Picture 1 (cartoon, chains in turn brown, orange):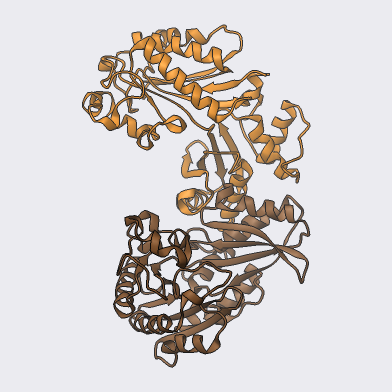
Picture 2 (cartoon, rainbow over the protein chains, first blue to last red):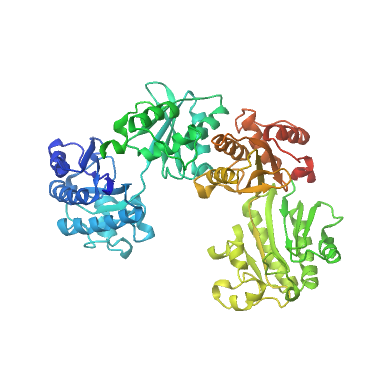
Length: 320
Length: 320
């Protein structure tokens, strides 16, 4: 069985279409690779690419893409609203199918080494791949940005994992690391009172005493003039979608407020949907759900009240 | 306004009534002190005392009680099922009214110093009062028990906070520290299937991805032949009673199971009850509940489905 990973490289270029076309070209027209989407943000001057596919080939193409980005992006001339430290700012690697977290950590180290050899850009290993506690958190590595790297990297604490202990002149440094898939999950509630919705968010999130793997805030939907609880589920195998939904529903009752609809931003694995469907179907975790991908999507829309959801939001749609 | 604390000293004597009567005598017939209960456990050979009262007088009497226990309890002759390291094994101090956690930490240090001066027993500060990360957790300090102290304390990591770096010959060492009030809260469910109830417990507790301040397991009630989710709420201001109730109710639905009743073991503050009552009364946190203690208890029994609950389970009953 093929080992499937997802990579979500962030490039420090969000304006020039021609440059981005060249940078992503290695991933195109390749067997066992699915270029899911490229999101360019002009005000950030940054692009986020999502690629899913067989691990070996994805990583090989990532090295090529990093080589092109190093050649075409010059950070001495780059500005944008999003902080950045490298031409390829960060390369997250996520285990998707038939591959463990441990294997992904090993792959990320291999990838870091190969990119450094191909580009001479120093590499930091971050997140689950970090070799030191203070390099786990990406914003800590990035603090001071491209312009501050030269001085920062003189400190042994900020020596790179692969390559020189000073930045590449135009491409800075890259971070590479394995992290858990994260579900961006929003719940629309029929309240026009921001304090109420902030109160719901506070009570369901970890920092407020709520669920361990929920981060949450209140956000306003201008077009509908309603609020949503906007969440990240940082480990959906431990804190599931259904727990987020039911906890928001429960807290909303205090304010006589209800859930209108929910929204998954980005991709989700079928496993995440199935785990929570079993709750609503009153099935034990251990039973198998014998439904097609299309049926799973239909049932998820119904039970989770999902809006704007379709089969192409499911990772497995691309790797069947 | 008087500063009210609760102390819950554990003594290494659970069989001899006369000895325990002498040890607790300093707390009796004192103004501003309420000796709530003494629980002696013969198989543990250990007693747990609960005292509530004005901080200064409670601590003064605690020093006296520790002196008597040091004289009367000889650990070289002690055996029981519960691990122990001192004649007074541990003295937890809890903030109750008009006193902050920070003040309680200071009080615990003062108490530790005074007990050491009065008894020559070395003192470890633990929990919130710990001066080193490895002495926060009581079982870590106690590991090796009374018999292992002499060797253990030669290691600078296990030097005491007050007193000698070797144990008292017959009384060992005592731990003193401020900790948060902890609510022992059980929920009876109408299931005869232990795996189901263990599944509910796993999903609501922190270690399973559930609420941040819930510890939970399944336990069997032999007389009724039903199971309960037995919980500790380790910070009821962040993870409230109502969240524990509603989370168990929600997870139980998967198994077509319901809550029969709930149970608070030990004492609870009126604030804890009020905070969760507001949820069921659909009131914002910020509103005041204008009810008598008796009315709060009555409403709690109704809304939380409490059994075996009465006004003498509420801390404020003793300090009005």
